[in-house]
Image (cartoon, rainbow, N blue to C red; front, side, top):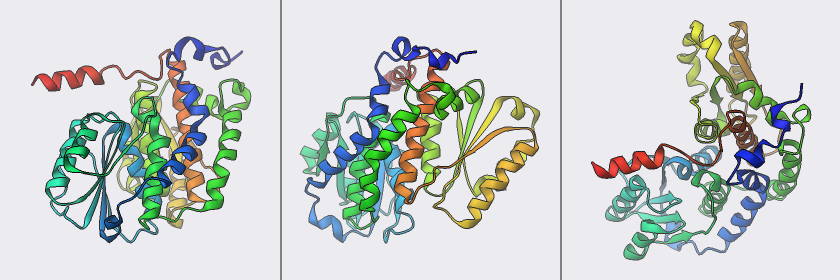
Amino acid sequence: MASPLDQPLWTKLDQSEMRSHLVKWTDTFIEWYDKAADWALPAHFASAKRIVFSGMGGSGQAGAIIKDLALPTSPWPIELVKDYTLPSWVDHDTVVVAVTYSGGTEETLSTIIDAHEAGAKVMILTTGGTAASLARKYQIPCFEHDYQSQPRVALPVHLAILLNLAERLGLVTVNQDALKEIPLLGARLSDQYGPETSTKSNLAKQQAQDVANCIPVIVGDGVLTAVAARWKAQFNENAKCPAYTEALPEMNHNALVGVAEPAAKSSLYWLLLDSAFTHEQNQNRMILTDRHLKDRQLSSRRLNWPAADSLLEVVEALIFGDWVTYYTALLHGVDPTPVPGIPEFKKQLERR
């Protein structure tokens, strides 16, 4: 029986053509990494001692991924803020990078004001809006880009810019050979996972079919911890379904107990993102966690992406997750781009 994903569902449901962004994911990444290299980073940023990434939703994902990539090498502590208020210790020795695609995210705007008042070294990444106005008012460095999409679809833009920033601040070392491989990787993944490739040969379509009628639980470790959170959000926003995330080794200290509940067997599908760039014991934990789930008749799949460099592993895992959630949306009969509910919720908040 032919898979419904081998029918041109995307021409009917994907009205905003999200697929066009997915196909050029790596080209977009390299384009904005190169553009970021030409952006003048204020010299006084180098004297800082710590960094905070502030951002919500799709705009906050790049900072979390950078934190995971930088963790093994960064001489600075790295903090993530997904709220209205910065930590009390933010001061003139702190770089605060505020990311708001729209320029109007109220939580992030609040942290920009907090950072300015604390005397921090602030940088804003946005397409304009109030964030750009605050940058002009406070004379804050602002990287304005013009990539047109939903905020979460602009992840390769934000990730490339923040990676370049982190590299120049000495927080992460970017393997230039790996960087050169990214366009080739993108071409290969577009062929493997793109809509024109049949389900029989397309692992992303196969995975979408397996998970479409379940609630995904995505488990990450190492440099794929924030990637797992990205997958969770993509299931939420693209496929319009519940999804949850866990991280190793923490889940082995609590979540393992709950999997024996009968309802979990029928409703949950566990996706284990197995990183090669993590503690050896976490690699063992991932194998044993998968076995623990299968021994209890739970649906699970352990996924890995052999790569010579952690950046390549992260990029491939991100792209695969984007395609899986895209196809899950099609199987759910929904357009992957709109986010019904969020705009109305924001309006209700404004009225209070």
